[in-house]
Length: 493
Image 1 (cartoon, rainbow, N blue to C red):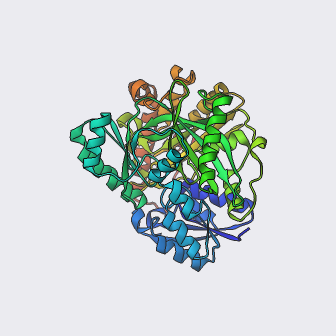
Image 2: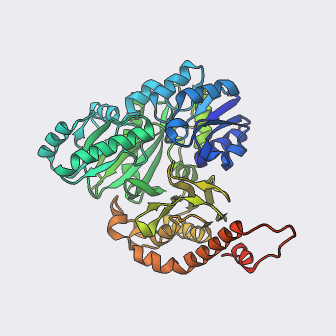
Image 3: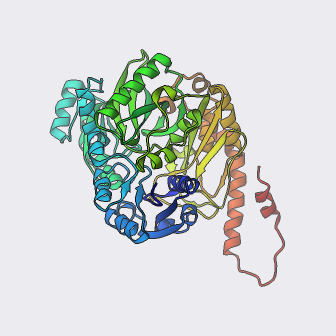
């Protein structure tokens, strides 16, 4: 095992990797932009280095700067987390040339499946069904020709990266040029690669993905599926495992298909194969995420495996800790992505300083977050600020437990999606498992959420206004009495 790991990411995933390193007795090196200087993960690492200004292009996407810090700190390995450079084959290759172990797939494997265009071609060669599309970088003329044959709507997708970045639904011919430019620009900003391709848009399927893991000896296993159908703007909002739509036979078919795709390119480390699933149980390959997923905790909760520790061990040359027939699934886990967004204003991004935060606790409740009082939520990065995960022996119990935990979750100073999740987990159709990728748009009633939470919002707003006035007030030399407002904020349920 290497002795020191540079974590080439930020926020909760950086903290997650740092914690795994501590448990394995490894030293960790954090990197941060000027916007993240006072973030919690920076103080938790053994060493930390400034990358550059807040924009990702000038910090977290700077391969040269990351390699320089790795050399300076004496790190032997680099963990890319997710997003940013995590699926960048050039970064993986640059690490290898710098004698650094990239904790992820080899560059050639990443180029074979990490790029979504290449992954479609691999799946097609293996005879795996894919959504109709153009398996290559497209221009506007090609897109119009495809639309003439298959009709609208269409889906433009970034070839690199994921997380909903660089995706645009094209409803008609007049929107094609603008959508193509926007998708390419967003992809270039997020991943450093503006290449986009085209698929026929499928309106109301389920989105199911399979976790795979490979080692350097050619062993590949799958760890079951995750249901990721609750989305908005192609961003996942809730993930769970197992899926209510997948029985044992379908799980075997999905898992073996994912294993076949991964094994065909000699895949190492953690990865995910994503599929669309229709009402008749037919599935279509979408893409491979050649990295650790945001939603990996739900797989950890139902399998009892620590995927980040497995990543570190496999990268150090160890075998996978178990064979396929030794994988066991127990119970049901659900993850709610808590984002700094306003569900009352069409999920508009929310920014500002976090004045206070209270995480939920209790049996089988997990919170992955780098959030702390005085954290600055900015416009520069993804809006995800926490992941709340609950486990129970069955789905109903997991939903009840995450509801209880959401009622305990408090953030003061920045609007979050907690009110949305409270409404969602009480929705009858969701609880019955009747979900699809357009569920939120078609069935969610934001007015009900607004009415239910207006009183709590008013109390939090009043408390925050008091804090702002306190900060503007002149400082006195002597001690000041504790005000009723401060007492109220401290005792806020």
